[in-house]
Image (cartoon, rainbow, N blue to C red; front, side):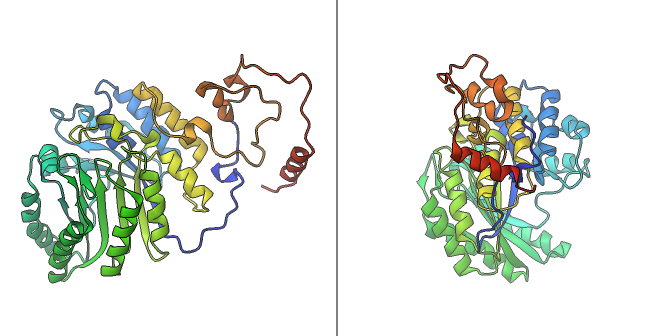
Length: 391
């Protein structure tokens, strides 16, 4: 890879856009991504990818799921994976467990943080999807709320979250409206409040990719207007129809600086639930695309975009097929010592476009019409500014 001091040396002027919330990224490639990929991917290859992701500056990585290998064979060796990977200081590692048996397995690994450290109630808006996905009904989820609250009270919890999944629509029941979402959130909020526990966060999932930017904006405005004390918003958006990154951007511009926006994403955009009807085509926001967008907006993620792009290229090799990120294919916007050569030959293929990271080795046989060297006073001026820039 082309040497660069850091991903923040792409010439981004470090001015944070006024009024933006704090942003946290949760990397889901090893869980949401791997669960829809081949079960034949070896533990060794998964270790290679997990260790690469750990070196990118990502602060939260979901390593997998403690679930039945009968129905999710991709997670059959999750215990071995967690036993063998190389943790990095400063990175929070977590995992998914859907029942007590899974949580008990997870407790054997103290390194893993419980993703539900703050108690939360949750309900799916789609009764069909939750039956397909967890063999439970929507009503069973609702009936469990009092027990969740009671355990939280017993443990001395002072804060809690509320959540809805399949929030904007379902491939089996169609779209859901904002009134339905708010009603189910209201019921959870009242239950926690009656128990004397403050609700300060909301989780909204979209496993079948029904999110639309204007619906996301309206929903977040309604939540903040109804419950100003909810300042932490966690979005799990799927990208089946190509608008998840735009929806995340709208969320970023809708929430204020008093809020924290947590965004789930996946290296290369891989992801999908086998029970949702789209398979791998459900996809997620590609982490490298999200980091690039945030960096361009002046949001310091602490993530090395160059290393993250390398991890995305590695992920394609691990899963054995192309993934869906854009920045890993075209590179970040070149600036500050990384501008393209003015006599660059014809670049036509995806492989040749990798010159942004591989240099001339990416286009050994590319055609070039330039008989003499191209000169440009404008480029000379830019290069002069770069040479004079203190890094």
